[in-house]
Length: 258
Image (cartoon, rainbow, N blue to C red; front, top):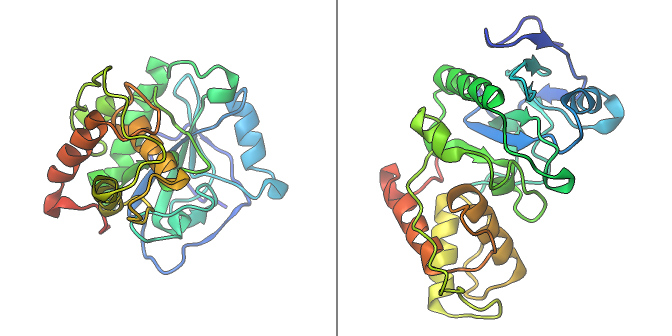
């Protein structure tokens, strides 16, 4: 149960029974952003509050910007599922999860409304300030679960959030339409180098040197977040340059530490 809101931005408390103590961590070091992927925020909140769903989130932000808290921040909500980042496979214990209402890719995937984004910005800023979450630890659900998830997707305005001090971002290299990227069955040192850079940034990926299906999923997730102009899973020069620029902008050049 939630005794009181963790943030002054919360408009409604709607406790979910789906939580437990965090495992092995004293406080969250990651902020994970999702979309609800259902027709309405009310349906999402109802599902997240049902014991049989076995899912939950700390917060839900509806399209009008109303913030509902469902799990206390001190607790481990069940929002990430099977996921990994920087070698950590218990993302639920490491993170606070915000569900941002959107019907998602399967139901038309509209733009995120302005009122909603203002509320998301304010809530993220509040959480980051209270828990000292590093910019590179503000992530998409698709970053930590690239083979399963697309959310919050390529329309989510990461650049806007970064301008407000939320998340890690660099200007992506423009796409060269004449560059189709490396073939899906390609292999070699360049593929291994890109895989290593992605792994060093935090993605769960081994440097096999081959463009295997997991590599394509991870590259797609990277593009959704950091190079949304073209999301196709292909390793093109725009993706490589953006990844190099993003990595170079990190303290120490890697995002593996909380």
